[in-house]
Picture: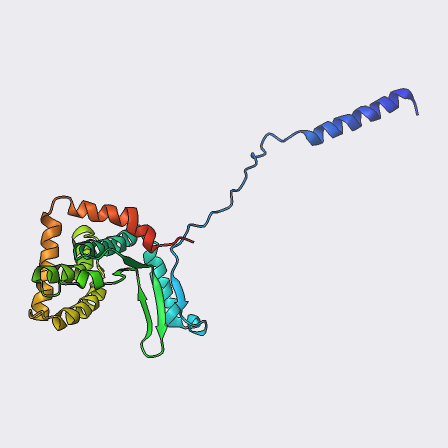
Length: 229
């Protein structure tokens, strides 16, 4: 083979290699796809639901409902304000130690499934009760601590339809029975309605009370009630 032909073959090979390395003008730029980060969810305690019952359609429906509710920041705010209002009046009644519980689903053979969005309760009423049970003003403060949560949501979260008042009624009934045994003579319905009226009036007239309840709800109660996973 002549030298000229060898040079031509070598030149063609070099040009072909160079052509393979060129990027066509219309090739779109490469992009790096970022992995999606799942949003954190509020933990729902289902430890008191047997494993077999967790396959029950009623449980699955209840869990989905709670999960959707807790994904709404407005609902979370309402829950925190509800419990913050309870806490405000419990402190007024002399309670200084609390038990916090987050969203929970339970199962009982007799009662079936039950749930709660969250709760703040007095760890003990012993100190608060000492020497106070016959004081009507103190008794009304205790009543306000029972009914205050729902009224707090009603006044401070006007766009929320469910203020959690059904649970407050049960709390009130339990406390009323205790106060009645200690000598309270005011009829139950009258006592409850007056307590509700007082809470509503205080939230609407006491300067910065609503602001205080909101600040405690967001700055303290929320972290005590909820865990994110």
